[in-house]
Length: 299
Ligand SMILES: [Fe+2]
Ligand SMILES: [Fe+2]
Image: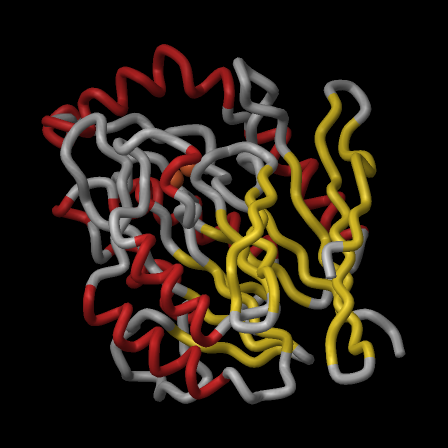
């Protein structure tokens, strides 16, 4: 049986940042705008992101997951270019996205993400006029994709995330109902689940509750972004450990302790009653483009 290939990229922070109207630059956004003008425009490059998408298309994955931070300051002018970029990645049947903290940067535009990308955020069982809710569930090939939102507007200098009581209750129900299904269950979440991996200013504040649900119901694979680094964590599930994989920003050049842009290809195969899953990391090398960096048999 041939493998089903799921590609994962994250945190494109779509460059360039459109010129902001002065009246939009108050509070947290003013700080973020200055930070972009001073530092981030050198780190997040459109040509790197375009090479990543071209390389990814050449690999012909069956499906693509994007785990948030599509834009930077959630300025109204950022969403139309981000929509055009996403349409170039693929149609909603082939691409699943979730929001990150930068997509809900300030309270005023926290609904823009759902307005701009609604058809990519649709639960299989939802009607066309239903509101977007999280988690939403999509069946694709052998996969069940369970897509969450941890994106909440936060105070300046904070990049924390939160699922909230309502979403945790819905997740409890969804994960419980899907636990017996013979599908490969993939949880998509922007923030990583282990708080000790970074400071309290960037963490998922209700990670413990989700870790409890995963311990009880399990999934087969967790994909996240936010940290902009390669990361593999093993979390406790009901029948052994669950791999949780993070990936660098899709538009970044190497800087500080952050590696250059990369994405992952997961080759998923049925193996008797269980699954096999191979991770193939493809990363950006200046003047060479994207190359195989490593292959790991995860499961
Ligand atoms: Fe990010
Ligand atoms: Fe983030």
